[in-house]
Image (tube, rainbow, N blue to C red; front, side, top):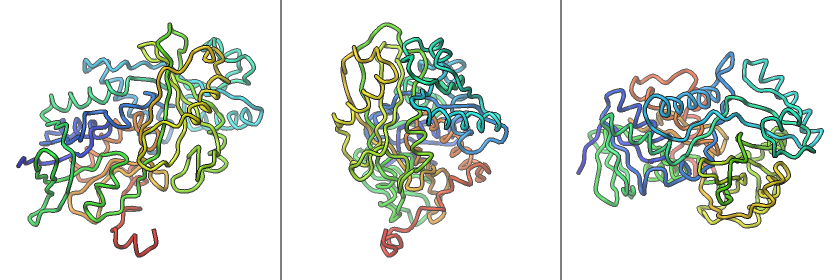
Length: 403
């Protein structure tokens, strides 16, 4: 049996960041990961970091995005870890006149709040990304947006946590969690038992299963995201890319619980697009978001739709066949907001989860905010909108309520 002051379950980017920052606070931390660090959603995403700056009155989204970007920069530039971080900028391309009007209003509102975005003509956008289709109507340019390798970045944070004194135990699948009569938790794993004074749930889509072990309904569900890649090619794509189509669709109607899906009840409601070229030369794109249980099998029809969307923006992609496809499970909360903080119905139980499709780009700061709150006992005011108390319930109460 192993003892730890704090146990974090989940070796994704949020869990690794929480371990690193708790170790920096001098806490005795053990991170448990059922497979390898970055083996889940944190390792199979596009590696995009979507910051548009802190703005004049930073809310939670600004903290998570701008704060995470600064942490990525620190890991790359100051801490000696090559995570392939690059502030590349990003273009969100505009296909229709309706999207153009939406993006014009959006850019105006964001700039009024102190964020760094700009509306470009297609000529201006093609000066940054020459392969864009000249028939496009323009693009929203975000100069602060960045990219990094998701596996390298997540594992770098785990290594930094270990250097600070944390233990990172891989191959430890959690099979049971129970509170101890004297306080703390007993965590049974496939490779032994760990006793913790405090427990942090950072297991992405699996937070709901861990919660159930403690008779808690944690309203985080798995949403399948899928991607495809070309074979390595010479430098051809310089920004991170997206499309205004889904941004406009979700502005009009975010849908049910969870929000912001591309396919709902088997029916496509919008197309979503994001992608970049990796240092290896691979061009990667993705976009679909669908509740498909726990399946990580890619859907060829969805891949074809996404590839067609990408070709509309970048016609040269039509000449590059798909070399590989993959999928992962993203942790979507039912109300669309993260869960970061202490679960009040249990002693010394914490969670950092529900970061949805942008967990990689928001996870480093989410982990830091959680670590700071646990260490000090006082959450940052900005975490009020991420308070787990709003939605985590006893399982019995949830069943009685018909959920």
